[in-house]
Amino acid sequence: MNTNYTQHYMNQITATRVYSLIQISCYLLITSILFSCSKNDFNGSPGDAEVSVNIGMKYEEEDNKSRALPSQVNSPDNQVIEIPWADGKLLRAELKTVKKTRATTIVPVPTGMVYRVVVYNSNGSYKDQKLFTAGSEASAGNFILDGNTQYTFIAYSLGNQKDPGAAPNTALSASTVILSSLALTDTYNYAWLHVKQTVTTTTGQNNINLILKNKVSQITTTIDASTIGPITEIGAKIGGHYSQISNIKLDDGSFTPTGTAQSRNFIFSNLGQSKLSSAPLIYYNGSSTPYALVISSLNAGGTRKTDITVDNFILKPGYQYNLTITFVTSGIIVGDLIWAKGNLTYNNGIYSNRNNPEETGYDYKLTDYWNYASPESVLLPAMNTTFQAETPAIQLPLNDPCRLIEGGLWRMPTLADFESLGNPIVVSESGVENSILNGTQPNGTGSSLTDTKDAAGYIYFTGTDTYSGQPAKLKFFAGGGLRGAVTNNIPQSEPDISTFRNFDVIYHASDAQEPNPTGGLYGVPMELRSYLYAPPTFLTLNENSDKRFNFLSQRYVHTDLENDDERPRRDSRFPIRCVKSK
Image 1 (cartoon, rainbow, N blue to C red):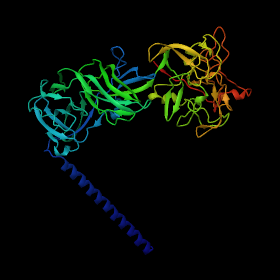
Image 2 (image 1 turned 45 degrees about the vertical axis):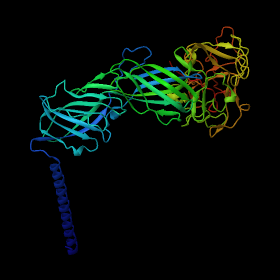
Image 3 (image 1 turned 90 degrees about the horizontal axis):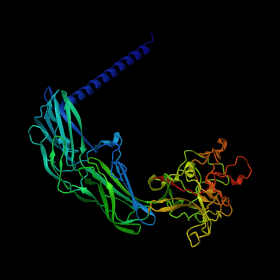
Image 4 (image 1 turned 90 degrees about the vertical axis):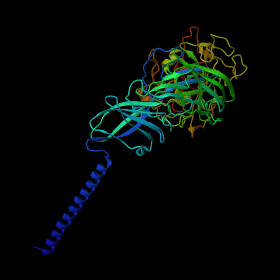
């Protein structure tokens, strides 16, 4: 045998054994340390249970159950009221319970918040209590109790850095009062929190979770005036608040409101901005009685109003609310929908509905004419494309620019929505009804016989103005369409070079490739749907005596190359008239 090889082999065995011994020694050392730490962590005697408390908090979860409510109240969890503001705008007040998923319903208590935990034996006799400060619980120590024994734990807090008061060291009963009274005048984040939980301990280390529940309401108000301008003055309050509660019970956290309900003021800061949020406000009214939001003064966008009352808001005890005030464009109710009065426009980063339908035509070519189903991440009126393009391909479901108005309240209309309007009444440029549409673009308001800048007729449908509550005309004017190359979202062709049927009333529908809902006509063949669509169209000079023409009776679909320049393609742009539910 080769002695060098034998010696090398023996060295390998020796090295392997030494390495294994080192591994075993390290394992025993680490295990010893872990067991030593475990033994040191337990501070009780054999048979005892050492209990540490993990504390969290939450508001009630939404029940979303329908129930009978006073008039004008939508539901306890989503309440919306609109009242006239100015210039066709409505002040929209929406009260919502804060929605939380189960993963986020429970939140940690803020550092520094003080809370007490009291322990009772199974027969209700007093056992122990401790005062904790969130973030420094270790200084108070853990509870040392009997193992394998049932206890009742009660935790409570004022939601701030004040001691909520020691519990009496007497037996727990339903009549035990922990606080004789508590003022709800300070704007704390939580105000009164309580939880009761039965736990059976085990011998050794125990960890229990106690989730404090809010017993009063919290409301935060946000005023968003980004559609009209900065807020320079605001004073707002809500009625029905009890500033003091009394006879606060230790057993279930219940209490009795004291005195007379009064108003509670919201506190705002950072005036001069177009969006403001109040400090969270603690609120309690003790019932489901509706109360009013009163805006004593508000100056937004240069318009100042006082003593605005928004009635019938319900705030349920134990829930967290957001009250959002926005300024939305009014519309015209026709059938089951509210139609915008004017076309969708984009200016300086803001999507909005025009208040005047007369603002239609090529004077608004850069802001009011939109491509169909733009795939771009930022939806702008002009999508980047080339002249008579087949790209970028139409992608459905489409990105809806109407959804970018006023928090997503609006949407593009469907073919069925246009069909539901029925046959319009046609008005000539001289204001004569049941006439023929002349096909002139109005390009704004003016002194013509139809109140347009350029003498133009229109079609209309009768409805109700959501601003005034009075009968109103839902008007559509000839606006035609545009086409041509677009680079960096800027059209490269002028309307007089690349116009598209400038004398017709043409509007986008979200499902413009589908056949008519009734009759099944004018659908786009599947092989052409990557770039063609057929928007609702009312043809000029084609109205006849029986008024059978409507938005869907003359949709324009080509399946061959004849009149190819008249096809709505990827580079074609038309106005949009948004709708929303009543």
